[in-house]
Image (cartoon, rainbow, N blue to C red; front, side, top):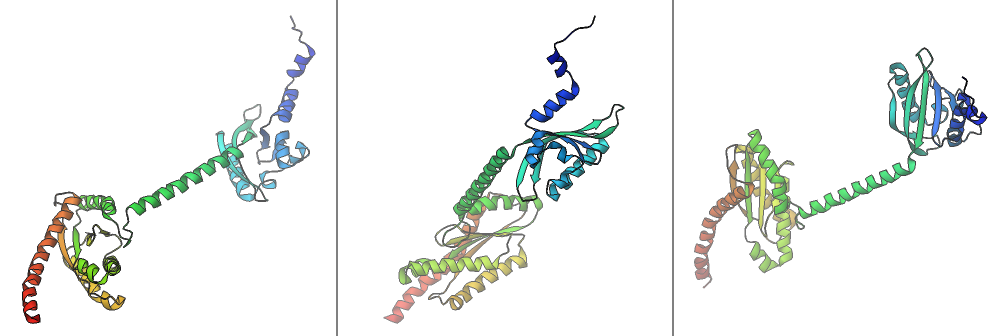
Length: 328
């Protein structure tokens, strides 16, 4: 028995009518292309997006007629691969560039269009504009990157000594622990120099704290110019500096010490300083079997420095009575 349907139901079941309704009313951009990526039909929403009065005006044209070449080339390459392989492109994000420089973003799905025998004869695609949400996403990403950059800058400030520009104690430990681990792991030698400025209190007391600051900056510059980029230098106290020398032993270590001593000797003339720079250095050499944390090794270098300083202090104390007797 034949089932009779109302006329409006018959109209709705008519395939061309359904397709026309879809292409006229759907707000997304719908299009069909042939095997050469030429448009054979587009939706009214697609035509409006391109400024066309009639969707039929797009027939026979390609993306190269509507978009900037960079976008058109990528879309063409993607579609030709789809036509050759039959592999669908689902939910793909596309960055559209227009000839006038405008930018837009869409999510696109493209699938192969087959004839009744199953042969791929073209493709069918649907795109949805996501420009507003994409721009908001990009702004959030830019803000996140800026905040991360500012946080990094603030972190670096907390690791730097304001007066000398070298690492402070916190900065030394932040970089030094990892460097010490790598040296032990790789079996490369290292050394810690504990540098104590001689007579900084006397410079401050007799010439003022600005002269003392000049002494600290000068020492920092001498140290900075005496070591390599990969080495780590820090001011860790009022008149105390520390250097972690990586892959420095024997003659190489001695060259660094010589450069520091020579730099301090030359600094007075080069910088027109009213005082002579000198320092006492304790050296702790480290190999793959040297135990202890960075803090413990720094303390050891400090003790070695103090052992160097004691005899010199004793000599100064012994000279003072003689100088007073001569003055008397």
